[in-house]
Length: 288
Ligand SMILES: Cc1cc2nc3c(=O)[nH]c(=O)nc-3n(C[C@H](O)[C@H](O)[C@H](O)COP(=O)(O)O)c2cc1C
Figure 1 (cartoon, rainbow, N blue to C red):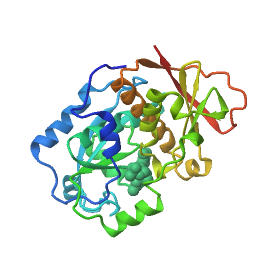
Figure 2 (cartoon, rainbow, N blue to C red):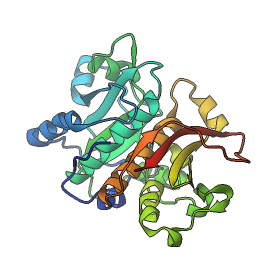
Figure 3 (cartoon, rainbow, N blue to C red):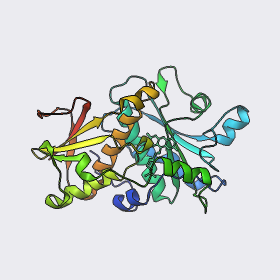
């Protein structure tokens, strides 16, 4: 795990301040900000070591070249730039690495006082992919809209936020466990790790489904995915819920790093009686 401090502000503040912005000011970004965004991925180390190609999409350029390009189909107002990452199709754990990498980017954008919104559902995959120079063996799972927030949220923004219950999060006792699946992880018992887990809980997830389940056992944290099968079936080519898991890993690692709690990612499913059949083991954070 990289020891480098990537941001100029505390990660916990960035995580608290971030939200899905769907109303931008329509003015694009200054060249120095664009240059900073372009330089950023050089510092990134991904947990599963996939090589991903980051890029910035200028929707004005895409529209000039393809008059029929849909951009983000009017869902996001006033945005010109999108950040994305291309990854090799079917590479092991590519979804989690995309989630981890793009979310680090989101937090970096937050540190530059920019708004952002993950888009994994409907966007112009074809023309955005072409703009990034996508290869036959690569895929473009999601993009992140990035820009300056508008002074006022659009009506559509408020409606989408309300329908996804964007400000709500599940109770910690429903998603974090201690030793077995019947015992909730109590924040008061482990204050430092509680703060790490709280930073996971505040993270974004597709349709705010919060599919991450984390259990602490023998001082390690094991990450599981509580998959919503119907949701996954709706988008068979893009595993948004494993991207969510990568985002959770990103918040966990950065928050632990900030608190000086060292550890590393390893694979090794623990023996846990009564694991619900729909829980999929992903990875463990092993404390050093
Ligand atoms: C992988 C992923 C895909 C998402 N796709 C979309 C999308 O297509 N459209 C959209 O408006 N929001 C999308 N979101 C944003 C979520 O709806 C949002 O994170 C969630 O409702 C929580 O709200 P918050 O980010 O403001 O905390 C996505 C989020 C993630 C993590």
